[in-house]
Every structure is written in C-alpha cells, then in structure tokens.
Amino acid sequence: MSGDTQVGNVLLFFWLLGSAFHLKTPMPPYMPPVKSSREALIERIRELPAVKRRAIRGSSEYLLFYSYVLAMKDVIDQLLHLGEITQELFGVLGGSTDAFEAQFRSAADSSDPTPRTSIYT
Image 1 (tube, helix red, strand yellow):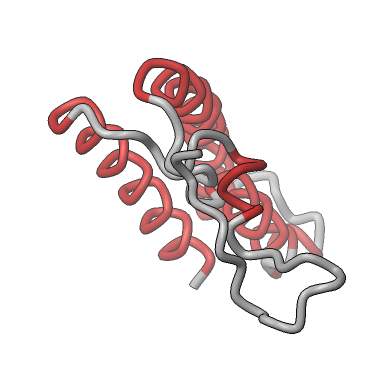
Image 2 (cartoon, helix red, strand yellow):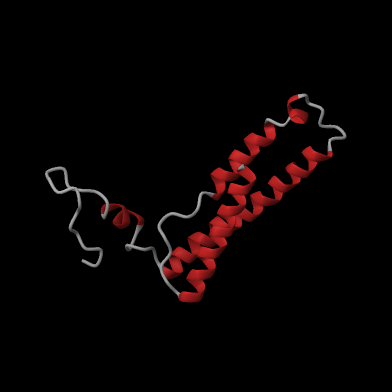
C-alpha cells in the first residue's frame, strides 16, 4: 500500500504543478506528503523477508525495490524544489502559510469558533 500512496502523492504533486503553470493560480500552502510516503515505503522494504534474513545477495526483488526507491528520491527532491519555486512565482493561497492557517484559528477571547478575518485585508 505504501507504494500506491507514494505514486498517488507524486502524481498529485505533478498535477498541482501543472495546474499552477497552466492556470497561473496560487499554490496551496502545503504540498502532498511525497517525502513521508517515500520514507514509509523504505520502512516497508526493510520488513521484506529477504532484507530481514540478510539474504540480499542474489535477491532480485530487493534490488528492484532499492533501485526504485533511489530513483524516486531524486524525483521527489526535484518536485519539492519545483514546488518551492512555483509558490514563489504564483504565490500561496491565502497570501502565505501563516495567513492561511490564521483563517482556521479563533482568538483566545472569542466565543465564536469561526474567525471573521478576511484574507484580503
């Protein structure tokens, strides 16, 4: 399942980048968790019987997974870099990450759980 999650997160990341460039709209403040899904996949690979037995020599399944994870590391690093550049070019929804989060926080003295601040002021 971790491999499916990683592929889904990478595809979603590409879709967000493509949409931002095509529509020239601001990016979301948070990107899909591609790095954490890769780390989860690495943990799953470490649980493979071939890895646990240390029977790596001659194991083509381990070699296949290992090469996939190494290749995806470079893809993910470049995606994260492109995401940062795209956020600089087109901006972030809500103005900034802090302004976006402020929309969902209420003041400590407020009895109203929904803040009434505008993102445009």
